[in-house]
Amino acid sequence: MELHPLLIKIIDTPQFQRLRFIKQLGGVYFVYPGASHNRFEHSIGVGYLAGKLAEDLRSRQPELKISDEDVLCVQIAGLCHDLGHGPFSHLYDGMFLPKALEKKEEMRRNGELGEEEKLEEWKHEKGSCDMLDHLVKENNIKPAMDMYGLIPEKDIRFIKEMIAGPLQESKSKKWPYKGRPEEKSFLYEIVSNKKNGVDVDKFDYLARIAEAFLKADGHIEIEGSGGRMFTLSTAFKNMEAYTKLTDNVFEEILNSSRPELQESRQILQNIISRKIYKFVGERKPEDPIEDWKSQKSVWKEELAQPLPDEEEINLTPEDFEILVINMDYGMKEEDPVEYMHFYSKYEPDVAKSMSIENASRIGTKKVSEQLIKVFCKKIDEQSVEAAKKHFEQWVKTKPNLFGSEGNLSDPPAVDTKEITKQHE
Image (cartoon, one colour):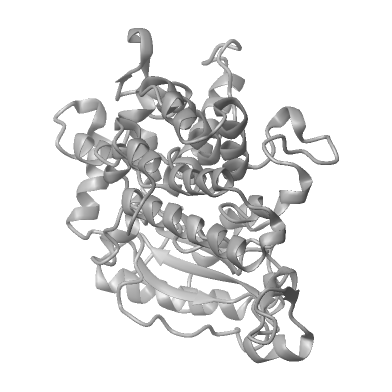
């Protein structure tokens, strides 16, 4: 794999090297040993693929007038699109930060948190843009950009727009991007495709180790710029502090002897000693449930209802954990193939949408589905077997949800579909 010298210069910075210590699939590694690759190698691959796609478009359709600078910017965007990921990837901004935000909002309502502390939602795409700015400044990248024909002020904005979409101040405009004109709109569909969801970064997903981090939040301090100290849930506000926050926080908690980290440490010890929640069953709802978050507590109450003639085993709502998974091709209820253009061997330089007749050969009528998975927190064999019976009883009481036959999903392919103690 050959990379542009400017990409090598970006790779050889502490901000990019940090990605070596962030697993691509987060906590999935604790179930599947092969899921050990990291954001570092993934990002290099995305940068390479993004450049190849841009170059292929240029060779097939010269009328698009794709310049060397366009290709280089696309490569940089692909390379840097994940700079903002926190520990265990999507765990950080997808589960930990929302939970931390809820906790802080509750503390504010109870008068335990001052009004002056700003509470904000945050996604890793914004972090990637912030970290890119930090990387460019700390490593004096702009002269190198000049040397290779880029205009830093214009092209850095273009790169950030490809990563995160239109910047806030431009969202209300007809053409919300400033990095490139509308006739080059296709460039924005390579790294983070907002049109059909198919881009070079739709390969790997979710991770979960949120509960341990939530309990450790406030007890781990990270030094940022100017000597300011930040916690796990505030480090993203300062890129110098955030550069130091990686998957290594797992070992920091696990190997700590500090009493205030005892609860977090116990959760992580349970993970590595395989004391994890046991899978008891899964079903596909007939129709997707939009408000499932508000129903989880009710479902747990229903799952804990005693069985006929049950004597010894008394399961409580707290003994159950429910995981709701939404699976699709990147556009929820829509088929991304309908929004894509394809080259034909008969017209190799013309991209056209696929006809319904041809699309039916490779497509499927169903492009999304929802799966409800139930786990038992108790791990002894007797409790797990009882939980499975409770699950079957619950399914039978939900014909409107799962259908008269229970809408049985395919059984797990392997006996490792368990959930760690931090699953939500």
